[in-house]
Length: 501
Image (cartoon, helix red, strand yellow):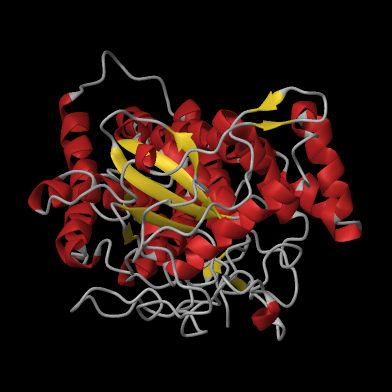
């Protein structure tokens, strides 16, 4: 009978490799608890590969997904799955070294327990591999290292157990229960330390700005999700912005949408309609935004379609921006008579003026709940916890009027007939006369851009995924009742958020 020392030694090596990958992932996650953005390690060789600070890697996508952590509604960011994975691999290495130290590698009870212990990371890795491929759509390199290490550890433990002499009689289970208790302690201690030492951020939630004039005077916002009695929220987005798609997808993955009444405020980063820009960041976004406005009650269908086909639309726009308009009308033929009409362009212009009236930064995406802007980091790792707090305990402690008021109070535009004589739902109108709370022609916003409430402090500076071009030199040539953003400078947002320099 061959000795099992080599096989058990391979368990030690595999567990050490798994601990290296899981530990690197845990470190990347914990760095973000300071509510700033840090580089993400995305390499098959931790320590030797380049880190990603742009938010464009698969490792970033996986870390920001709701599957990267548990208890995300109970604590900011949740508990990263990589942390207990790290503890499990350390325990496996400890247990295998203990077997070698006591020279019990040929004991069937020891190899049986080692096989059962290595099955836990194996089964977890299989489950997360399918989640990454089928749900998230990417497999991060650090995760792949954990998967390979899990398989290697299990195979080595299986070889060791099969080489073990057959036991004489039934094997006792009492010692296994004691060893299992030790393994639970290996996992529980670091998790409890993590929960006890991580910073308390409750005082910083929802304090990155406030809407100055939340009323939808010109009925330019569109409904994305209706929830009777739900917390009012506004998502400032560009339908061709990848970061907007990321926040939108994470928002719907939280499982909290039943308590949120969500509207979208369109802010296309396309100079075709956005006179605040000198260059287009997302060419073609104006055409999609017009289709969203034309769709009326089906606006969410157009937004969802744009997000689902975003890569295709962005690729087409890079070659010929006008092709986006063709693709939109092909996908929604009934909107062809509304898109590109002067009336809908005027309404989109009013949507941009709403952002000016509220001194919003030239940045996408932005999320406002009850009129208060969630910090960029709170729309990334901390989204589930932040939403749970702002629509629950925080809302109960400080009752506020719904942001934007009731949409019934805003003038409702009549339907715009299409050339075929079919009424388009909620189609664009020529702008109505300015309401009393509208920004006066040529005037400046009444407050500095997105000033945080007193004592809130400024959000930490973060690198951006994409830098916007500076405002257009001819911005002043916009219609006289269109204002440019006050202040002219914005705070950089979290990774994946597009902002001005």
